[in-house]
Length: 113
Length: 114
Image 1 (cartoon, rainbow over the protein chains, first blue to last red):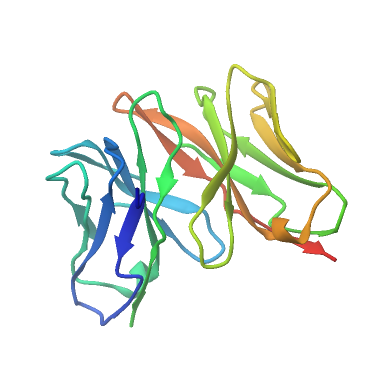
Image 2 (cartoon, rainbow over the protein chains, first blue to last red):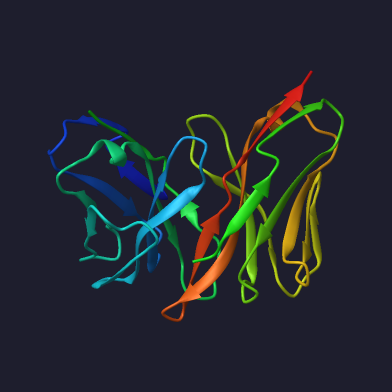
């Protein structure tokens, strides 16, 4: 299994541009999460999903959107990028309700200038 | 969500000494407390976790202790080695919409001096 994969690894955006961060897992996990990690800070939850077709906001959802059309994929959309969205973005997944461990992807480093 | 505070923010230890990182949380309903290790430029990796029905858990040189009454938990690394140098994050669970999420501490940068 590849586990959780993310693309791209790095990206530079100009203010006002849009992009989609891709996240795929091949472990048949129902639960998926998007976090952002700012320098010197812990991870903050942006959005999460408990299964295909079901998504909900986390702690810092403003400026982002998600969709979950399949079990495997959980893309994160940035509309009208702002410098405050410069961060490292991690996707994570977990098997189901009683399995608590989250498995992280390698991250996407995004810079908005 | 949950409010998780982590101390210290940086920790420098001599190789072979012990390292201790402490976290406090605010939600008395929290029942899952994982610790993640993150090496520079890499993804967070789970190193140990503990559930609220257990007071202590050990895995070789690392251990976690939990005090539910005081709402704090700690990571202990014994006989530290250079490869233990990394950023360590604690986390605590919180519940919404009948499912749990994680809130993370700000991290502790551990440097093991040879």
